[in-house]
Length: 217
Image (cartoon, rainbow, N blue to C red; front, side, top):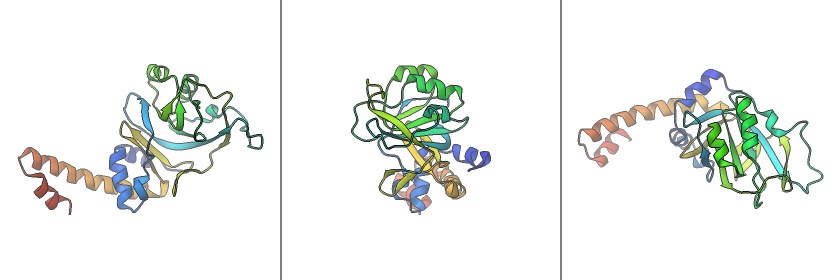
């Protein structure tokens, strides 16, 4: 598990900064959770925190394990729940009541690889919600939670593991494995200094091509 200090250091940077750093570290696509959009923003406009993973299954799956309590009650202060819904279903698997409970428990937000609903309620709460799409249908007859805090495959070699750090804003969501936080932070700090010098050059009237050649070798 990442230390509060490490998470705080990473939280200073945007998903764009972190994604670029992860690409530089040879992680495919910068561990970008493509297709997940901010549907509701919190007061900071950005979320950062360790993942609590939830695997949803179709309601008809009688063999799937069942959590000891409702999956929303597994939220923790400062964490972000990552919920993965089976593909192709018409229903949402996250709604306003769930955000109300997660907000009360001090969660930093939720990231849903699937559909959400009740967007106005999330916004009224000021609770950050990310989702792939929206639906008017609830989950009752379509999906149910099965496993909590297990590795979940997003796509190909991209996995979301319990404790991985999720960072998201209006541009999207990226995942940082705990073992990479220090390297990612160092690269982000280096890039931030280069960006600062680039802006200074642009404001002084320098051409973009020459600046990039000089500063981003």
